[in-house]
Image (cartoon, rainbow, N blue to C red; front, side):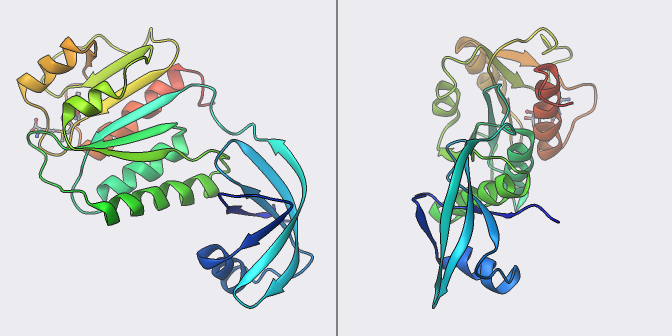
Length: 237
Ligand code: SAM
């Protein structure tokens, strides 16, 4: 028997209503009916086992049976900051970062960044994070925030134990092998970083990191950097 289908519902009560997209997905795609088991989560880290108790026009009612705390979310607090990317590449990074366990995701504009962000795009990125969390069985969902300049993005990482800045023009960096505790990772957009931006990051306490001798595409760099950091933190495997 397959695992109960998962639904993200911000307000879970004993009789939880599934409406809108969640209802349409449950009814039309999954063909759920009265008596079917589902799992509800609200992004807080808790999960709720529930049974569909009523199907009405435009909504379903799920009766909550019990609450548990998920063990799928990483213990390490990981924050990924990525320059806004062209096309749907930021979505790709948000999806992969959610699967890899990022707790927060920031998207920023910087000097050589040519992609733009607006309310719709940001909403779409948050939907991508919800879908990815649902699919990978996480019970928390990283919030995606936008910063209109690099400095405010960098300052949003104050307090992290390790603040690492991937910089394509560094021949060797300080590395992440010895990093312990929470971490914030910064990766530039397709246009990369300027020397001044690197200096700003250093002044704000970031360590410069090289990801090797080849120049990676921004989305490759973000996914590889987060994967390695999660591995070092013991969160993969
Ligand atoms: N336009 C830049 C160039 O031609 O050198 C390349 C920017 S790269 C596509 C985008 C971002 O990925 C960089 O700003 C950096 O954060 C990261 N990146 C890519 N390759 C890297 C490397 N070898 N070391 C460190 N960071 C790297």
